[in-house]
Image (cartoon, rainbow, N blue to C red):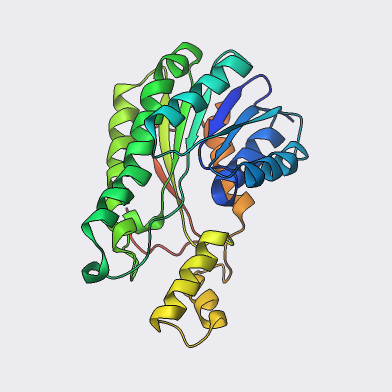
Length: 261
């Protein structure tokens, strides 16, 4: 059943990875979706694949989420095409990996722009349309906000700002807009492949296979996640079936996190 039929959504950084997976699940559930990415060829290829998922319409808007004007154009594209915005899903590529002493000042600022300010600007511009339609915001972050990950000091530190923003907005934008976050663990995406390659270059792993194995080490379900499993969680949070879920940060990690809260 197309539970989001008639709704419109924009998903930032959705030409690949978990952003693309979220867009796919939204389209499968009937939502019309704006895809966003920096690379036109990859964005067009993603749009072609996402269109096959379901009845929702798909349009693209090229742009860099670290550039304020580009974010404004993404929001405008959704409004122009669909007449408004019911759902915003914020996604972003991950910052560089590495230990604290290897990270430069510029990399700290770039990570904040990528992970936090992109969300701030997107929600700020989309807010009037979300309120008008009684919408949702879902922020894709990481389990690193609950349990730090080795050699990911930027992700461990900066993503905390996204969860603080999510919790604040869940109160400030209520009752018209529900705001939640999802915290993915290891999923089979190009980002995780990149992290393994970077770790291999630093000597963290003896082989690429060892690095992939570490992604699901300690996961009770004994496997890495599939992107669509995260995407389906996002689509659920956008739907009326999640109408009393607000201000939550939901791990999608196969039970990896051991923290009780």
